[in-house]
Amino acid sequence: MSTPTTSRTEAIAAAADAVVQRVGAEVPGVVAGVTDREQNLYLGAAGSRDLGTGEPMTTDTVMAIFSTTKAITGTTALQLVEQGDLDLDAPASDYVPALGDVQVLDGFDDAGQPVLRAPRSAITTKQLLLHTAGFGYDFFNTQYNRLATEHGQPSIVSATRRALQTPLLFDPGTQWEYGSNMDWAGQVVEAITGKRLGEVMQERVFAPLGMTDSAFTLTDATRPRLATMHQRGEDGTLVPTEFQLPEPEIHMGGHGLHSTVGDYLRFLRMWLNDGASDSGEAVLKPETVRMAEANHLGDLKVKMLPGVIPSLSNDAEFFPGMPKSWAYTFMVNDEDAPTGRPAGSLAWAGLANLYYWIDRRNGIAGFWGTQILPFADAASVTGYLEMETAVYDALNG
Image 1 (cartoon, rainbow, N blue to C red):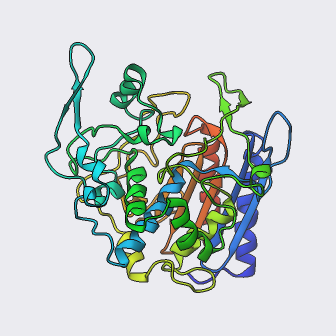
Image 2 (image 1 turned 90 degrees about the vertical axis):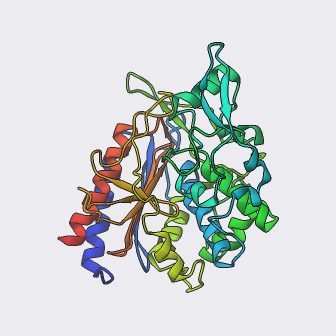
């Protein structure tokens, strides 16, 4: 796709904004953006940062971005692969010895105690990047939820080292299960570089891309712009909460960042541009991007995510019935999506109803940011998909 003409750009912006303004009346607040390979085509906001105060949502609002952190962690791992410092197929315990002690959970005995055994093979960093190592999440897996409720396993959101210390749900490489794999991948990055993950991201991703509002820890500049988390009740009402990500003991590569939609669009644009920043600086090599965007799951497929903890997530699946694979480190839709997104595009989401897609074929990407629990909130996810559809309709109109 060539760069959209001025009229086409205006049409895309108008189409996206119409959805954002309408959905902004149904959710506390939303910030959304669309970019091509050269620039933002749209960046807009609607609604409130906090329903209690009525403070307006703005395009520079800071959000906890949850699992949209994962692709940034994956990018730092790919940089280490490029340098020859990380072998994706080697045992990950070569870098993080604690991974060599992880066992497989084979259920619970009659007394309710976990039944553990040694895995039949070593965990690799490739499996961590693909969510095939065997780690899960308590809000998407009943076995993990039982560890939390009956055995005091801390939530991964606590960002403690203890929260990482969970068993595998199956032998490495045998299934796909969405979970804390990328948190461990972040630990691999830290072990190789000798630096905290946030420092690695700042030096290798945020600085080259000009992402000035992205970090694990809030600053004096970002804290005043932080959006309030809201909880949707069973009756559909939305209320502000006191939830904030804690000061992290561990920089969690799977969920821990704060950022803005404007910052994240810079990251998406780098993936559209074969790894180059807006200034042309190489964050990744073009051949790495082409390798990374491919399906690396083989015959395995991405599964529906069951909402085991209803306050945190509804049942969630993108494009139900359509086969989906996994790249380094994104979901891949194997067939053309009903929104207009072509097969082979990249995408993922964050727990507080943040969503993005990357269409490298057409050179367009978008991000939708809200701060609502539980995940897969009907108003937010429907709004996101409607915005994506509107963008493609305008692009192809």
